[in-house]
Length: 135
Image 1 (spheres, rainbow, N blue to C red):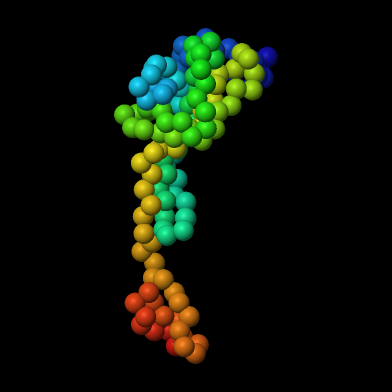
Image 2 (image 1 turned 45 degrees about the vertical axis):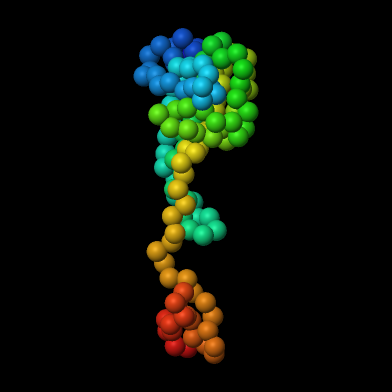
């Protein structure tokens, strides 16, 4: 018989006992909690001014171990860095708390592509004002 998602999440002894754990500190100078990391990725998002490299992670904390939940925008310590809390979910009383994090050290990288501007007539200009192509 297969377990439903709710049954699996409610069996925190299984989740937090059989998978490798990491540590998160909430807030930065506060209490440390064991957590699972089901997702960690480095995203590249286009923002005004360039490419934003934004490492993100989802962590799960056993509900019975955490007294005070962080708020959106709070800073936490994770993987020896500061991370910003994007969201906190605690849908079921027996399910772990799910926290979405983004690295506070996300970098905004200038784009290497030339900036195109409309020139006089039908030509396109690079950011330096030189014709890119003639129309």
